[in-house]
Length: 421
Ligand code: ADP
Image 1 (tube, rainbow, N blue to C red):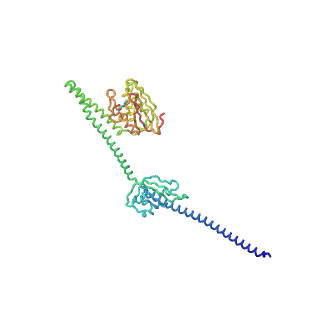
Image 2: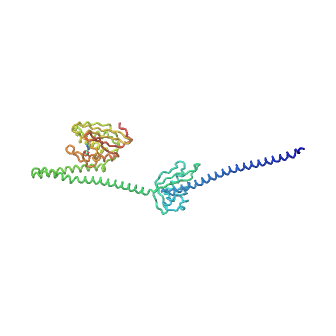
């Protein structure tokens, strides 16, 4: 006998359905577990990121705080209305306010140029940086402290103005030093003027008694030479020589002090004409020396013609005075333009100068070479220096012993007459 087919099949089908259901359940569970673990991983990583962000924000905040606290310069952050938003410790130290007293206060209360800073804020976009202006801050007890103020406009990501960061540096010491320097320069200029006046008055007033000494010693010499003993003749001769030399020195000193005290106002001056006239004035001296004198076309400058003539004269006379005996003297006056200056050089082939004395010879009464036809008082080059400096230039010499000298001086180019063709 066989089993009824329907009953066995039904059981098998039920088991299959059950197993299938179980499988689906396990699958769903696995899916759930997988999904939730992915979700939790994502959550975890988001959490980590947030934590790191938080840490780095906290770290950078305290880092920035640290920077602000360590700054020696006063720092103020100002909002677009000109209200102080934030200050650092240096600001509270300098201004004498507590932080809470400063924050919320109009910047004009503490900044002498608060208005200027605000106007810069308003001019937004044109110039976002305020570069080191000298101004002052006003402390709580009303003192003004000199500061150098810089500032830059703060903008948000859309370019809108958030405010301004201002940094002020105490420049009291620098200002004091600057004022002292200005005062000293002023005093120096004044005492220089006084000295010039003094030298002029002294040399001028000394001339009269000196003239008397000189003429009476000459009278003594004429009347009593040979009538007293030989010692007396010698003494009288010394006195005559001394008086004559003193006269030359005083005259030179007078001339030297005249450069500063009696100079004429500057006017358009043609150096070519001045130079030609000087050569005419020196005619006999130049001829006697047998010198060959040449020159470049000289420029027109702003200057005192009389003094420029004296300058050329002193330099040419020196070239003649300090010539070599074994060679024909040649003198060339050259000119070249260097930026804003004419550089004029008076070159000779004379005895030359040891470079170690190149500066000394421009000092009053400093001489290197001697007597005879080279006699002098040593003031010629000092006068040249004074004339050149009065004209805004400088003078120097390039020379080697036995190889001649070139005395260079500069004169500012007068832009209206800058050509010398
Ligand atoms: P002084 O001509 O009366 O001696 P300066 O002041 O004109 O006075 O010159 C100072 C010195 O510089 C001169 O004594 C001389 O030694 C030197 N010196 C000036 N010009 C020349 C020159 N062209 N060549 C050589 N030496 C010179």
